[in-house]
Image (cartoon, rainbow, N blue to C red; front, side, top):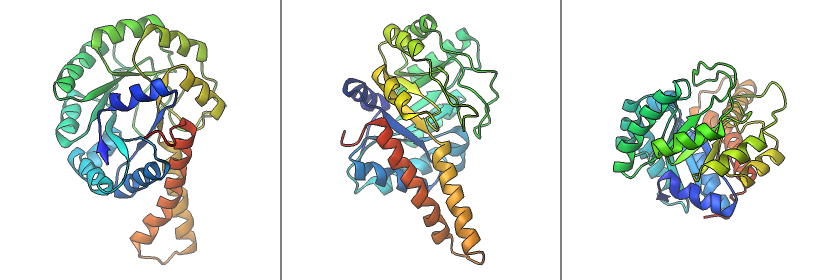
Length: 283
């Protein structure tokens, strides 16, 4: 396995007109599924952890698991902090072995978002670490405990100003996407995405990959999306498989068989995400 900064994966993806999928992980089972699926598909991959996940496993612990599981696999990967909520957590993840971090300042004022993102970029770049930021507000509350107002789209002109001011490496945009399960069929604002891509010269990120129709995913990749996040779909598959196993084996005390049952479904969804991103064979 080769660990690289996030931007090394994303600039190659943008040039090749595919995206790299980012899968949220919090334990050894998740990491094993992701790395094995990526290796089998000859695909680059991003293992990421939201703040609650990073704190659960610890940054150093999660990075150690990734290195141990990936040691003998042919795969190129980044370890990424998803929706980082503070400078302190970004520092912990960088020191723990992550190769990129996100700071989500979307709930801050535009200027405060710039100032905090710039601070994290300066620290991260000094350590050779990539930084993702968010502009606009990606919709609805999730298991990551976000407290979001109704979805606010990313303004193309503000995106250009933000990127120039912060020197961030990639930008998560709000174009009608949302975290979690969609209550109505999503319709991405692809004209807005095209306008943003004309204004900024860095890879763009699409959060909320769960439930976005494949034709819209393909169109968004053509317009500059180079990283797509998947979390809800893989977690739900794991949990449903564990529930089914327990229903069929109510007296089990084998945690390994329980985790194996969940991991089969988790890995299947990771493989599907890789396929949707068009990154099979892109190592």
